[in-house]
Image (cartoon, rainbow, N blue to C red; front, side):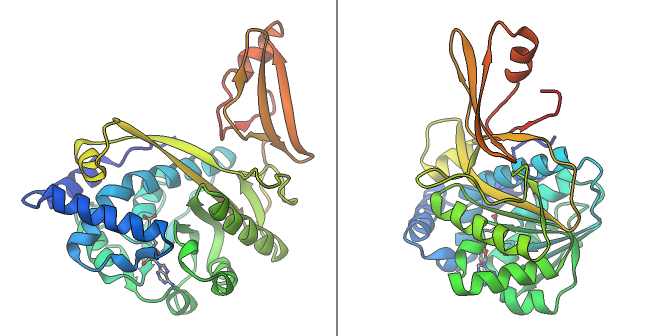
Length: 325
Ligand SMILES: C[S@@+](CC[C@H](N)C(=O)[O-])C[C@H]1O[C@@H](n2cnc3c(N)ncnc32)[C@H](O)[C@@H]1O
C-alpha cells in the first residue's frame, strides 16, 4: 500500500519553489485561502503564483493523504486493477494525479482539468520535475465543457472538488464524470457531514445509472447511517517543517478527515464489512462498529476467543474486514 506522505520528488519540488520567498507571506496567504474555504468561497481566492504555492504547501499533504488512503482501499478490494489512463477533474496543483501515479505503476497517460490558471501553472511546474508526469496534459477550463469534449479514462478522480459546484450543477457533473469513466470513478470529499452528503447523493445517483460500489461500502444498498452519524475516515500524515510553518502548527502530524466513494462499471468481489470507527478495546473484549450488507452491526469479540481476537486486533478505522477475519 502507498504511504500517506508526499513523494520525495514532490516534497522537494514544493520546497524548492518556496526558496527565496517569505514563509510568513505564504502562511498569511494560506490562512486567507482556508478562511475563504471555511466560509464556502471555494478556490476563487487562489489568484496568483504565490497563492497557488501557499495553497499547495498548506493543503496538498492532507488531500494527497486522503486520496492515497482511498486508493489503497480500492486496491485492497481490486488488487488486479491496472488502469493505464487517468482523468483528474478539478485537479488543482495535481494532488490526485501524484497520488494515482504512486498507487498505479500501470498508469501511462495523465489528463488533468481545472478552471484555475494559477493552480494549473503550479501543477505543470511540479509535474515537469517528474519523469512520469512531465508529459501530463492539463486543460484549463470549466469542468463541464472540458469533460464533455474530453476523452474517457480508465480511472477518473475528483478530489475535494464537487463541493465547489452548486447542488444543481453537481448532478450533471456526476453524470459527466461517470460518462468519462471506463472503469472506476473515485470521488473524495472533506470528512464533514456536508462532504459525506455530497458523496452519498452522487453514489445513489450513479448506482441508479448502473455503477457498483467498490469501496468503502460492502454493498450497493442505501447507506445505513442516519444523522447525526456520517460515514468518514481519517488519515494521519506527517508534517514537514515547511508545512508546520505555513500552517502555524506545532504538532509533527495532522489527521485529515475524509469521505469517499469508488464506483466501478462491473461488480467487484467485496469484503463482508468495513470498520466505521476506531474499535473500543476493554479488558474483556473488542467492540467494533461495522458497515455490512445487512446494515450497521456492532461486533463484540471477547479476548478469550483468542484466534478471533487476534484477527480483530488488526481492525482499524476504515479497514475492510476480510472473509477470514
Ligand atoms: C479544493 S481544490 C482541490 C484541488 C485538488 N483536486 C486537490 O485535491 O488538491 C478544488 C479545485 O476544483 C477546481 N474547480 C472547482 N469547480 C470547478 C469547475 N466548475 N471546473 C473546473 N474546475 C473546478 C478549483 O479550481 C480547484 O482547483
